[in-house]
Amino acid sequence: MEPPALSALLWDVDGTLAETERDGHRVAFDEAFASLGLPWRWDVAHYGVLLRITGGLERLRADLDGRPDAPADPAEREALARELHRRKNAAYARRVAAGAIGLRPGVRALIDEAEALGVRQAIVTTTSRDNVDALLRRALGTGWRQRFAAVVCGEDVTAKKPDPEAYRLALSALGVPPVAAVAIEDAPAGVVAACGAGVPVIVTRSTYFPDDPVAGALAVGPGLHDRTCWVPRPVADGPQDRDAGIGGRVTLDDLVHWLAAA
Ligand code: XBP
Image 1: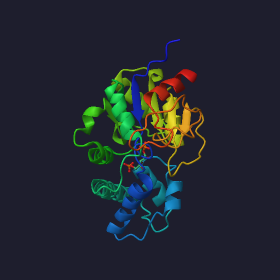
Image 2: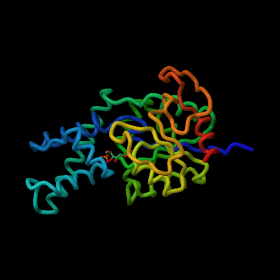
Image 3: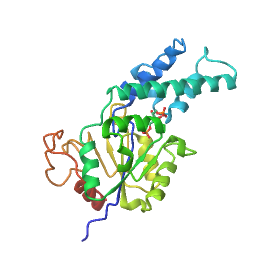
Image 4: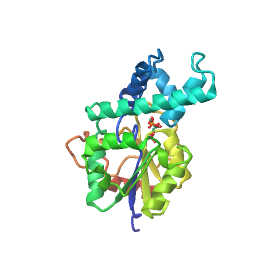
């Protein structure tokens, strides 16, 4: 039987391309609070709870709603949330440009392999466009945008993940049916979004979502750099690229086999 065609890879950003949350966005939110003289800080554990809300602005709104020392007037509270978010994104971009956050191991190799084999790629994220640009400019160089056929960000959608809108937009920009694509995600909201658009999805576990239920995923594993511990197991040993683990890295072939098995 012919293996299923894989025409597109759809990449989530935060947690999947890079571990951006704990030492990137979280710290940048704290910088934004401090820059306005606010005493609020989001520690590592509290940020994990807040991360269940997708979108940094939405996260700020939810936090401010529960703070007795936040402005009571809704318009004032909204203006403060927007100013904090603007400052947070600027602080995040500075951190990333300074080299604080790199791609997760195995990511670069799969991007390169997909490109070499003519598999089109898209970014599908609920984060802001400037944050994606800061991260990928630093990781892939100034020409990073040419490597992706579509880049769907938080500004492009009316509803963020877990809503499937971002995935639907990417599919229509690429002109591929959902079953010819594979999404790579780390968080339950992203898996729900991909599944909602009918896109098969694999999960690379991340710091903040180490064992959350991800029903409907094709395969789940610790990262793209190491084929050991994936469920289901990849078929054969993978290539030993520079940053690969002992079992070799996850390849496009693995994705095709997982698709076929589904
Ligand atoms: C992750 C998010 C984002 C970031 C913060 O998106 O939910 O909100 O945490 O970025 P994804 P912004 O996993 O889809 O990449 O402040 O720009 O929203």
